[in-house]
Image 1: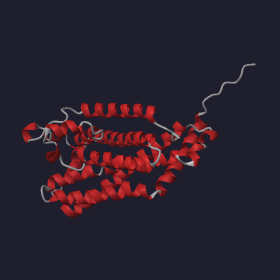
Image 2: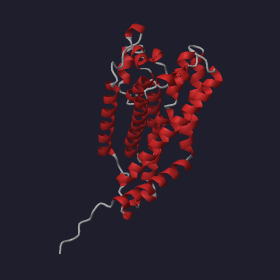
Image 3: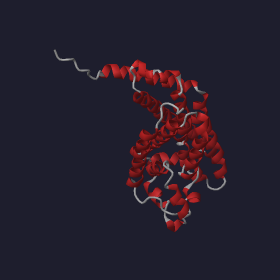
Length: 285
């Protein structure tokens, strides 16, 4: 008699993945940190930086509100990193092997929840910024936030948002896998987060940031810069190219749209590859 070979039970594994995802989702919505970083902080930054730049150029400020909607996608980094560390140290995850559930499946469920959270809060903050811009700038020609809706390339837009969320998830998994406690890694995470939002082109207009070749070279080491530039390209391809012309006192970062796409994918591949060699499920004694 031949021994019956174990076969992959798709229905069973799907059910397990669904239950794990629901478990992570419930943990996410019960954690105050999630709402603070994914909603409160992005709205606070949107309003604060809007009024900082409003007196200089209202047209530029209206356009920047689109960039500020990306903040939840970046704050996935600050929310997911401690969540991974806490799950690693939880009794549930230490006993997960007994249940037959693979840890890789559990990590995949965490990625899915935070990816969907980043997308969801992006549209929430975008909706807030739309209402906010109308309240402050009205619906006239100077409200460039509304005018941007007429030229959106939705394909590049959704690809950019997904790549930004994926970059945050990759960084969070790398940091969370290395750390043994959330406190030990939080300082590094916050430093990377602030470098990302200020030097990737999200918080500051290109006209005030990419004026030095040295700064531009440095920003190539910011992983979020690549998908953020793709995001800007989605709204105005010609404006994206013109905004980086050295003839306007700025330095080019990219010359064509394929460059930030390839750069984003290469960085993601590198981060996830590095994570496979550095991720630790248990703390070293």
